[in-house]
Length: 162
Image (cartoon, rainbow, N blue to C red; front, side):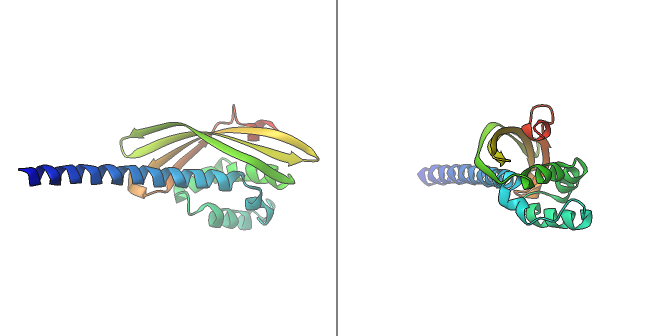
């Protein structure tokens, strides 16, 4: 009887650790994507927007490890990469990148994360405070890749500042 109890306890602890590690790796992937999206280094060597085919290829190689093909297509269609590229490539630096997870919800088949992202852009000798609000869905069946990214166009600075 004691062996069964020990075995069941060990199984419960193992399952708990596996679930915790899975959510942690998904959260780390989301946070790596955010860092890459708002980083100055991401856009300094990227193709110009006039070379649309090359720009798409560059974005795919930069962000493909973090998001699914569907999420990539949606971000391209909504011109998210174009917006960040045009704003950040004109800056001389992006500093003080901070993000705070404001919500995490487990739903049927996916985990929903919401983040508040703040950073500073140095542009023409001025420092501009930026704050963007992002939401992510990471499907359980897709491993750690992000299936959906939403960036609020009403409250995010990237859409208002320039």
